[in-house]
Length: 242
Length: 169
Image (tube, rainbow over all chains, first blue to last red; front, side, top):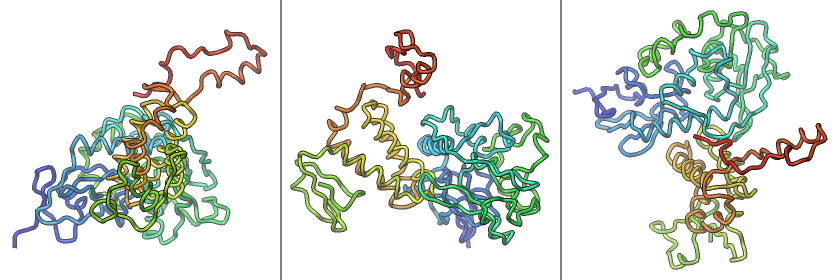
């Protein structure tokens, strides 16, 4: 039997039954912008950056199963405009100061903002009050940069079996919390060896005493824009994570 | 008349001959009737606050978008609005409509969108200008400096003739 395929911006993409549009696109080295998706974890579909138009309907490509003969629009001015607005929303919702951030150059949010040519935050800043948690001996938590992708939540729960992190609150007040009575990371069994310590796509979970080991200018997305790194993004596992 | 709750369809007087039907004005059974003395802008602003409060915060567009709409509506209510806010609301509406995860986000801008289309004067009479107006009050921000220096002469006031401050690209 012929392998099923769908069209991604006119390009035929083969897929296995049960694969999502994102899975198949990653395997075919075709870039669909995304933040909350990670091939190692169960897809969630909350950041909405990966929104595509499949057979005329807007869907999240990380949760939508591919169908034979499906026509998917991905890299179009209209979709990229919507993604840019979503990025601007994420930027104003938190406190993102790239120049002083340890993750600058390795940050997916920053890399996508460059990729999608986001020139300004556009909206007024929300300036939320999110104190940092420096209680843990090896790890610093800077909640200011959290984009609520829940990758650390999923990693800690599904891989580490610890459920150190969770999201709390609702609406614009939604925020990342630490599952301890005190709310402090030091009062959990979180360790640098945890999978959750290395999945943050932005700069929330940072290793202490290891600042700027790779100079800015030589970092992941300094070398090549994120749009040309789908192969690496698809290969993200416990071993190769940066 | 608001048919089928806050996320339903808002009908103006000239539409009263339309039919309650799946094909025309669908409803789950709820109706709200607003008399002629009611301010439809305030009705829509109330709905905007309702949706921002109801948003669960799971997906980016609804979590941030509903709060951005509230900001636009509050700014207009304060008399600081401009066409810029109206354009912003339309832009956020288009995004939430297609990118939100569930029906709440997809429909969250409906009451604002409908009232903007059908009761536009309720919005426009509140706009300070038809271009851009900053939310930030420059002269107000100088108040604490005036208090500290004990000055209140004209030189200590910002005269807001030039509108170039705080322009968003």
